[in-house]
Image (cartoon, rainbow over all chains, first blue to last red; front, side, top):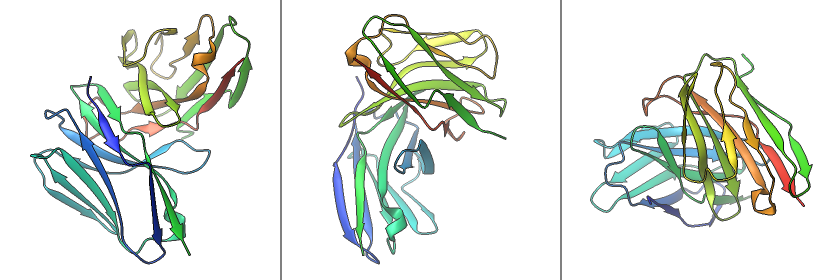
Length: 110
Length: 114
């Protein structure tokens, strides 16, 4: 089946940039997403990118998509302690099925 | 709007027991889905629905049943619980089935099967 992979952990210092990476296998994925999950809560959509785009910027967030390598990344500028959470990459596979990665736990050190 | 609500928040079952996890949304969303979240495995799609009366299987449907008699509700049934079903379950909904529609997630149900 289709797969989405992420590294499990990332630690950065407050004020630095964070880059969370994701690779996927379904080359026909049309939409690719980044979600944030805080402790004890559900997932919250941060941003998404359509497959015909290379980059999308939304305030402190920058999404880069390399379709050739099937690689998606999320850059968080000026990372704050409130950004500490689990970040999930997800792709829309086919019409109705969303495939999620394992999540990357971001720890921001003060 | 209450958004997506799930009940109960926590549940402990014994092997072989049955139960229903409730999910409701008040946003008139067409698309609803159930996921389970396990450590190191991310979220996996169990079942989904694209409208009242229409359901389909996701990635890990075995051991779970769903129905969608109304737009608002999408319950998930465990007919005979097994320890392998210990997990956190999330319900999600979105307005339409286009990928640009935001999926809203409920707060989750933490289920333990002994």
